[in-house]
Image (cartoon, rainbow, N blue to C red; front, side, top):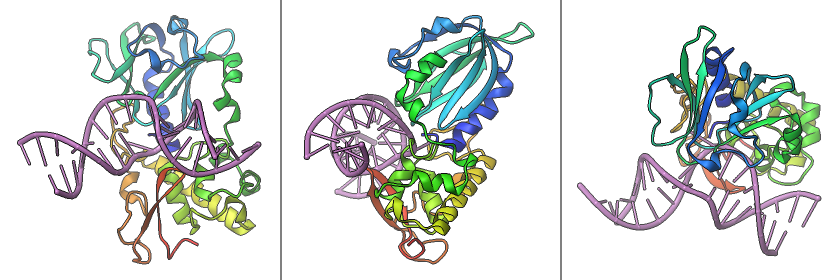
Length: 275
DNA sequence: AGCGGGACCTGTGGGC
DNA sequence: TGCCCACAGGTCCCGC
């Protein structure tokens, strides 16, 4: 579900609610929601929340401990993190509930809801993170690199779209932003990833960064389930050029947008604008 | 080694 | 109206 802009938005909207709050208790309603490498939920009890941030599509809550401890959430397709008053009952899709205490002594709850149950929570220190293959292999943040770095990551002959979706190549891009960035960069999703010249690579990175920044500024895209920590929808879906528009007219040239599958994912592109 | 495709789940929307 | 099927923002695992 949420890609980089959506997770960034959740982190930003969650922070003011939970910063400096302390975990009092927690309850896991679906066992499989806890990552296999995770420390038990009870580890959190008494921990104070120092920060809320994002790495790739992961939401990370930094906890105040003598050695670093994190609560890491992967929302996958339908995960949601949001706060609720102390007396609010769990919902049908609530997978984990945390009781938190504010600095003023009052209590409230942090819910992890997840309809499709693909989401994961991981309580870990640095040693556990080092054991987590997915974490170890995560590629660089697209908003923090130059095109020389991107060029060095696009060395395989696979389809450009498949490479962009590979979190080891570059982190945080999912199906929506891959399609939108490729359209903006005027590059075909089927181009071999290693066929781009320097100008095209720079154009691609510029498009990726622009699309991600514009989406963050509009609080992300809401297709179905996505909401930020305050329950609000994003607005970037209203500006999609290609995603979800297969068979419709290209907003730039009027040609019919082509829908296909690349790496098992629905892919929409303009056969006229993207080469 | 690296790639493609299916699996993992539940819900929704379109077609009949 | 209601049923069935395809499809959904992501990653993991398996076989080729």
